[in-house]
Amino acid sequence: MRESLRTRLTRWGFNLWPCYRGTGGRVTFIAADWREVRVRLPLSWRTRNYVGTIFGGSLYGAVDPFYMLMLMENLGPSYVVWDKAAAIRFRRPGGDTLYASFKLDEAELTEIRRLLAEHPKVDRTYPIQLVDHAGVVHAEVEKTIHISLRLPS
Image 1 (cartoon, helix red, strand yellow):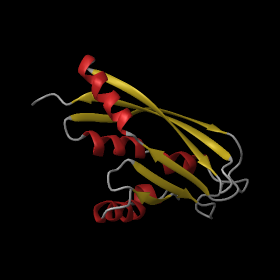
Image 2 (cartoon, one colour):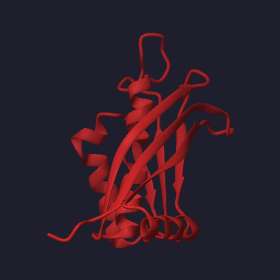
Image 3 (cartoon, helix red, strand yellow):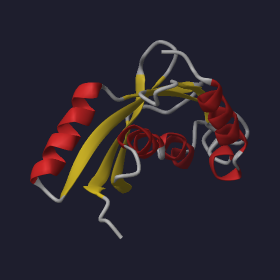
Image 4 (cartoon, one colour):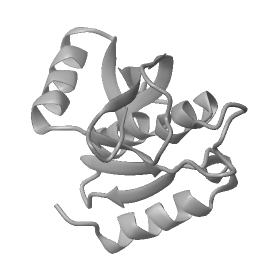
C-alpha cells in the first residue's frame, strides 16, 4: 500500500519532531492504513558513539514508538495502547546505515480483538530487527505492548 497525504505529512512531522529527530532516525515510509512503517538510521556525527559505531540509544530510539502508534491507528479510540517493556540485543556494531521495517497484518488485529473479548487486557510482543543494506542483523529489539478496552467515562 502507498502513503496517503495524511501519512506523508505525519512522516514529515515525525522527522522534524525534536524528540524523534534527536535519535538520528528518519521515517522513510508510513502506509496509508498504518500497517507498515519503515525507518532508516544512518551512521553520522549525531549517531556515532565513542568507538565510531551507531550509539545504542539511537538504535533503540529510532524504533521505539512505532508498534504502539500502528496499533493505536488500527484499533481506534476504543482501545488503550501503551508501551509496556522493551529489550535490545546488540548483535554487531552498526558501522553503516541501518534499516527497520514494522508490519501489522489483519490476523494480528483480529487476534487482539478476540483476546480482548475474553480478557480485560492483553500484552503483545513484537520483534524488530535493525539490518544493514545486505540484510545482516545488527540489533534486535523486542517491544511489549499493553492493550485494553477503553472504559466508558
